[in-house]
Structure formats: C-alpha cells, structure tokens
Length: 244
Image (cartoon, rainbow, N blue to C red; front, side):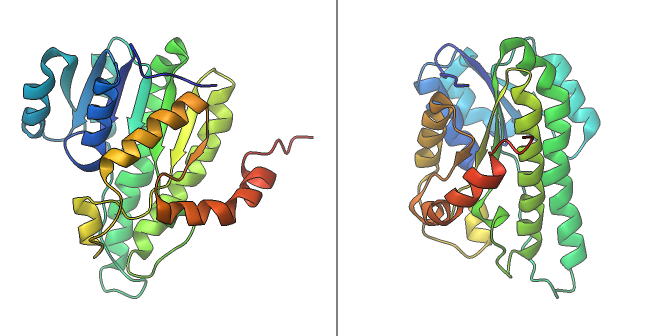
C-alpha cells in the first residue's frame, strides 16, 4: 500500500510546533487539500492559520483524554492521513525519585494516546483507504538511562504500532512507524540534545515513505545507524509473515 499527500485531507496531533508543525507545512506545500491541526490549546495554531487560511482547521484534541479524542473524531467529515505526533518527555533515570510519575505520564500520552487515537479515527481511514503515521523513536529500540521511562513508553507504542500494521492492512489502511534520532525540537532540548536534523527533514522523509508504502522510517543520520543494524531482524521477524 502507498499514498500520496496530494489532494488529501490529513490530521496531525501536536501540530503547533516541532515535527508536527513541519509535517503540516510539508503536507500543505506538497498539495494536501486540508489539514486538521489537532492540539490541546487552540490558541497555539495562530501562525499556521494566518499562513494557510482555510486550508487548516484547528481542532481541540488531548490524546490523554478519551472523551476529547472521541469528540474530535466525530467533528470531522473525512480523513485520509492521520499523523499521531503528540507526545511528552519527562526525563528520568530508572532510580529517580520521580521515575514512577514520569512513566505514568509518558505511558498515558505516548502509548495510551496512540491506542485512543487509533480506535477513534480508524473508521475514517477505513473509508478512505488511508494511512496512519505513528511517531515513535530510536529509543523504542534502545533504552538510554536518562530517558528510561520515555524509552519504555515508546517501546510500548512501537509494539502497538506493529499490531496496528497487521490489523489495519487487512482493512486497506497503511501504517508507518517513524523512528527519529535527535531532532532540533524543544523536546530534544529537554533531553539535553542540542544538535540534530531539522523537523522539516523528518517531514520530507515521511512524505516519501508514505508514497513508497514503507512500514519503518528512520529519517535522519543517527537513526539510520540503528536501521542498518535492525534491518535483518525486522525483515525476519517484525514484518515477516510468521503464520506459515
């Protein structure tokens, strides 16, 4: 399966900054018909609405709240591409005093948020034979101590993404799992990472991966070192047909 962004309607969670904002801009500059800006605070999308006018529609959505996700799904009429980009980072090593609180917060948004969004919006994607893009991370494959709980939440979301791939492909819906390394965003600064690829570079790679019908995307130089080591396992286990 593959999908082009041209003429399509998309919804991007966490659309007001960082990678989410870059995806919105790349989709619209590449010919998308309309993008829903799904954010917790509607006042944060002013810059995008001023730039793109009626091509964007701000939609209040908090992935941590099932009622909010459900209401957003009922509010839209059509959807071709869903980008679940919203996430939080609460840095904690595994012996921190606040490690349990960090893990609870990150699981609520990064993992349960994916489940809520997928359940709510899948009927739209089935109807359009569209695509779901999940923003995972290289830390879904390899845990780093200072972001141990974030790594755990992303490993869990990657596991769910794999299940969604097998479930949704039978319904004609493409699933893309994106695994960036350090990207120049506010979240990366929280983790003490100042260098990295631009959010725009990630957005560009997502467009290409959707068109190619890929499941995994490692969009930057650092993540591609993970890809090189992971590819054989992925081909043999993750994306292989093990039913035979």
